[in-house]
Image (cartoon, rainbow, N blue to C red):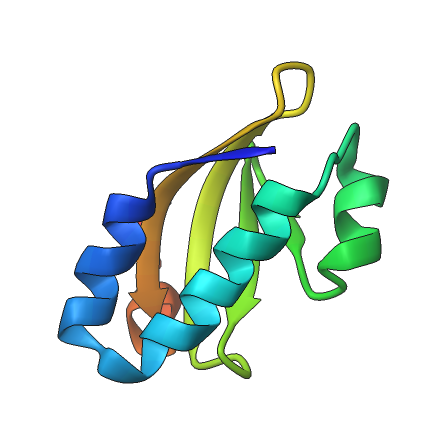
Length: 94
């Protein structure tokens, strides 16, 4: 699956240095995998949840949240937001 865009991950990590490793680990797992549906995605990312049309991933031991749109047919994951847990809980991303 292709992750679009790593730039969002790098920009978030520039503000939250402890996020760099976990975000790049996430990117590598996404890019190595082929996920044809939500069940296949969940087999690799056990904590992923579907919220409306978006997919929410826990990153870095639940310290961060990555919000994504996924097109399973074309194998693309679009990063919509990377947030701290506190920012996520505010709900402004919805």
